[in-house]
Every structure is written in structure tokens, then in C-alpha cells.
Length: 360
Image 1 (cartoon, rainbow, N blue to C red):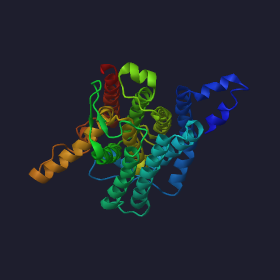
Image 2 (cartoon, helix red, strand yellow):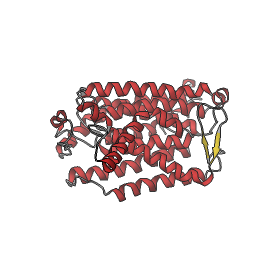
Image 3 (cartoon, rainbow, N blue to C red):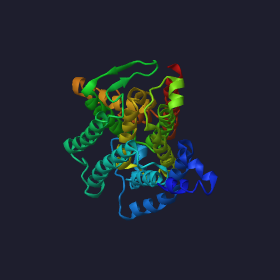
Image 4 (tube, rainbow, N blue to C red):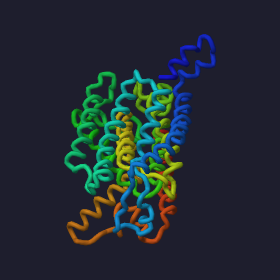
């Protein structure tokens, strides 16, 4: 809420009037999120090393990964802390949607933190039991879905909007609640599955945050939404600041997570960031667009599903290893090449998602 304190002085010093603009605060959020990550990152990494919170590497994966054994994990704490501190500075905490995002971020972060704690500290390779893990994820998403469905200020709360087409939507009624659960939980776990090599997941999260930042700003701005034929959702424009903070925090963390990584995100980072992307999509009615902008996450998830289904049904594997990024590593691609090529695809998919605005 720092921006409100500064804005209160605009009568005395007129340049402070800029703090009322979402675009200005979003720019500050990107910079602040990145700077905070860079400042607190080294200290948290040293602390994780000191208490021996280090990653155990699977023996059946790419052999090049064995050298990463002992690298600190649970670095997602850096991202979450940076994001929350940035929102305290530049976010409007009187906004309902901002609080929904904060609850999603912290809620899924706590699930990931507990899972990491059991795996790393308690040396339980399975971590949090699947029934508890998915039960908690579904519970948080269900609460979010119910709150949004009961929101009288959202005229489109039960509608599924189809991109690429102007004014094409379906009112799915109460079924929107389980649908929102599917989107949020699916997004959370998709990012978690993608977080297998240095910088891959956090780089794609940054790309998705940038694309969402533009999409959210348009849908939350009455003039731009009318011009582009996008549904105007009052109050959602404030989430542009959240997306900016996520982008900045992701860039800052990428400094430490880039190949070769000094720290890994862990489930505390991947589950929270994935859940946040899914929650943004549900709030702004961009669920289908999320599947485009997060296309790599979708591909990674389906590679695991296909691998498991094929092995159980036929006894054969489709890929050398799933998720699919490991498949390309085992085919001989250097890890850095896999990362950059997946980022390139992620950027192209993000641009495609933005093209849905004009095509309408």
C-alpha cells in the first residue's frame, strides 16, 4: 500500500499523481520484484545450504543431472517473498481479486512447502501423500471458484469465453465451479511437472506472466476492451500489477536458477506459481487462452499422461523418459539447448495468445 501513501501527497507535489495509474505501478512492480529477488536471493540460498535443504537426484534420469546433487532447493521461497513484498508496495489491497490471488499464491505455496519438507528434511521420497496433496489443492481451488461464482459484481461469472471469436461464449452455470477447480489445479501441477531442468519452468512462468499482464490490462480497461471486443471485467485491471510483480520476481529468481542452477524452485515455487497462473485465468475468463500461453506446460503434462497410459496398457513407453524435456535430453540434446528451444516455443505461443485480442 506504499503507493497510496505516496499518492496522498499529489496535492503537494503533482508528479505523485502518477501512482494512480496501473501502468506506472506495474512498471514499478516489475522492477521491484526483480530487485527484491536479487537482494534476498543470496542470503536465502546460503541459509538453505546451511540447513542442508538440498536436492536429491534420480539415478534413472539423464546422467548429467547427477552433478546437481546437493544443490539447494525450495528456492521458490525467494519468488513468493519477492512477490508479496512487491504487492505490499504497489498493489491495491482493497481489491477483492488481489486478495484471491494472494490466497492462491500462499495456499499453494504452503502445500508445496510441506511436500518439500517431507521430501528433503524428513527424507520421505514420496513427500506429501497424493490424497492429501490433491485434496488440499482442490480445496483451495474450490473456495476460489465459489467466491468468484457468488460475486454479484461479475456479470460473466458463469460464462466460458471462447477466444478468436467476438461475443462467443457459453453460460455453463454452476458447472463453472468444478471447471475452475480443474483449471487451477491442472495449471499448478503442470508447472510442477515442467520444473525439471535449470531455468525452464521459471523462464516459461515469466513469459506467461508477461502475456497475462497485457491480456489482463486490456480486459480490465473499459476503453481498450471495447475497442478490441473483449469482455470488460471491472476491477480485474489491478491484477496487471500482480502479473508485473510475478514477472519481476521470476526474472530475479532466474538469475540464480539459470543453467547451471545455484538453487532450485522446489514444489513451494512451482505449485504456487502454477496455481497463480490458473487463478488469473479463471478470474479474467482466459481459461482457454491459458492453454495457449502455457502450451509448453500442457505438452509436458500430456507427455506424462501418455507415457503412463501407454506403459500400463501396452507395456511400452512412448518417450525415453517423461516429462518430455527429459526425452530430448536422453536423445542427446544438451540441457541448455532444451531450455532455450522450449523458451522460444513459449514466446511464440505467448504471441499467439496476444493475437487473439486483435482477431476478435
